[in-house]
Image (cartoon, rainbow, N blue to C red; front, side, top):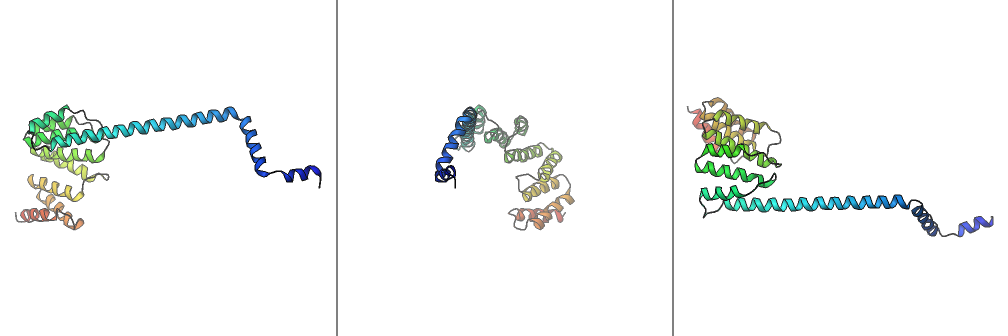
Length: 218
């Protein structure tokens, strides 16, 4: 065996690896620095985005909590609740439901027209649940304004929406009540029977059965 080969075999593999790594670092020093700077910059950007998102969520939650506290207050009148809620500046997250709270208070007060006016200023939320709740409230308001056909159409759209967060059996019962009130007895009966057939464990079965008996006796 040649002397050079014997010396190579005696070399420490780990030492060889370190030497080659150092050589590569020296060779591509500029590129490595640029890569590190880019990586650090990316990490900083991600952390900043997460920070502001977290701050925004906390702010939204506090705002919603304050709004809900006003809505459920036992010491404030309806007008005082409405006034206080109108002072709050809602955003697109959970706090966007403040508009719905105001509309609901006007509806509770008996001013359906004003409730509808407030609801019309609602620009939507990034949360599907809030948007669905808006549709339910709007249907109730339309019904009280003697626009039951429009209310039924709205509920039908929510029912047909595959991504709806509203329970289907609940929607069927609301639809049946509206349809019964507009002379659509056959359609109402069909929807009431559908509740029993498709949702045997539904908590709305008792109300559905009572309405069904009344309609079938007509």
